[in-house]
Image (cartoon, one colour):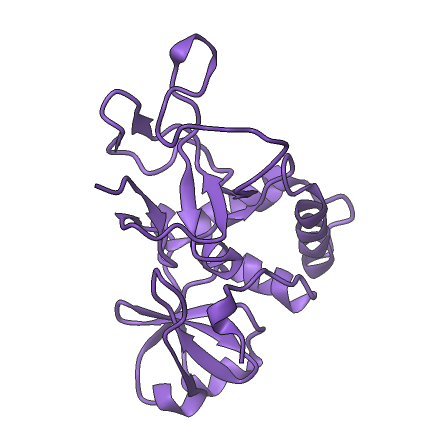
Length: 215
């Protein structure tokens, strides 16, 4: 049975066999004895996106990865960085320092902050992402063209990533269909990607896409 550690663009955590390109965490939110999630879905405001491979570090998912046999942070997995950003995560400074520095710098540029810091960013994201209580703003199909590539919107329970003027339907296995924006006309769309992250994308931050998003 797969562990419940795969995150969708809404920030919910599921038990599915697919892994994806990135790992991440929200602190310790599992019981290492049963390898199941606790009731809480985060322990920190810093929700990060990590590399799956880094310096030959090996971890047992949902295991006892701290000294003394204690539970370490809970490994979560994402289809790609676009998905992780929509769920409200941001790059990790430990294993993805270059990307994290670029992300925080772009955050500062977007909001006129001369010395941006990750905790500032984390506090903003924590109020915006749906999985920690934020309410996705409603957007019309006419507004989609003004959103940056890498932003994600939702039509009910279906998520779409925006890229090169197309809406790509998301699934755990990859992007399964693409349509012109007007294919979503008349539907009440929610902007899943936190507003702060959308501003970072506007500054030119380029997230990693799953290969199924390629033309």
